[in-house]
Length: 159
Ligand SMILES: [Zn+2]
Ligand SMILES: [Zn+2]
Image 1 (cartoon, rainbow, N blue to C red):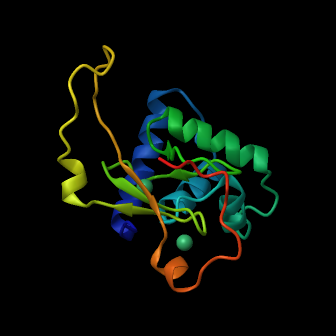
Image 2 (spheres, helix red, strand yellow; image 1 turned 30 degrees about the vertical axis):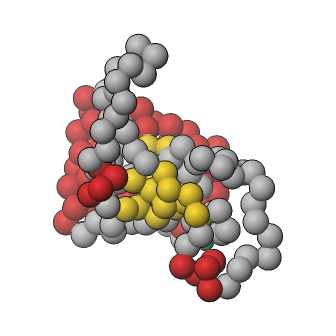
C-alpha cells in the first residue's frame, strides 16, 4: 500500500538515523532515491527507479541507483523482491506481506491476505529454523486476464 506523506517522512527520518548509526554519509541522492522507492507501489527495477528520479537527479547513473539500493538493503530499509526476470526488483515496504506475481506483464503487487499469514509451516525443514516467510502467488493479474499479453515471459518460475 502506498504510504501516506507522514509515513514517508517517518521513514526518511529513519534513513537519517540509520545512516548516522552506521557512520555513513547521507547524500541528498540517497534521500531522493529512497523517497522514490517508498512512493512506488510496483516494486520497481533500478532502471525504472532511475526514470522516476530523473527530474530531481538528472545526472544520476544506474550504478549509483544500484549502489544506493544495496545500501538501503544493508540498512534494513529496503528489500529485494525475490522474483526472477531480467532485472532485480526492490521495495521499501518492510511490513510483513505477500506478493501477487503476474506471469503475463511481470507486475508484482502486495497483498496482506490474512490466510497467507497464518500458514502452518511444516516441521523438520532440513534443520532449517524459520523466522519469517512470504508467499508469492504466481498467476495473471486482472488486466492480463481481460487482455491477454502478446507473449508470456518464459523466464518466470512455475512455483
Ligand atoms: Zn499482468
Ligand atoms: Zn511488496
